[in-house]
Image 1 (tube, rainbow, N blue to C red):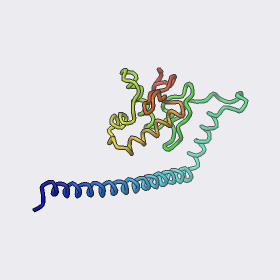
Image 2 (cartoon, one colour):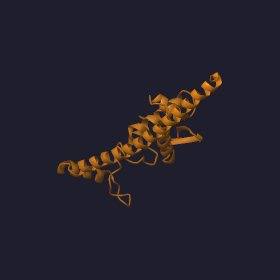
Image 3 (cartoon, rainbow, N blue to C red):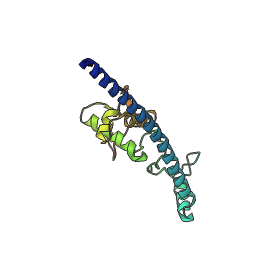
Image 4 (cartoon, rainbow, N blue to C red):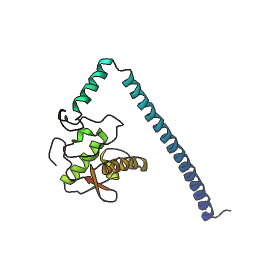
Length: 183
């Protein structure tokens, strides 16, 4: 007759094997998800480019006229003053922060990160972590989501929108204006 300890060890071994199998399956699914997301992004970019190419001629001319009017001349004279910054297109790069550039130049995801950081500072709670961002945005606090937010936050740091006073903790950089004005 088998001992109780022996039976428990057998069940523990079976449970450990099952956990290992599930982890391997989760890793496989995560890898497939990353590939599918990249493919989806490529298709979205392709659809956007096709839309630009197939846009009616009148829309294309209007876009060029707006860009030409907003661009200052090389000598800095004879051109019109730059207009208010326009919102970045989806999948556009994060522009370098400069004095007078409003949050509206960023995509909505980046604006949400800045808003959360500004709210934390306003409430005296200090810099925000990526796990806190994920929770505040209603996301699952899992490594993939946290790393995606970390990537965006690091991009904002590199472009001067956020500061990282301690590793993994983010707050709006000095001088970055809040939406609608104040800094």
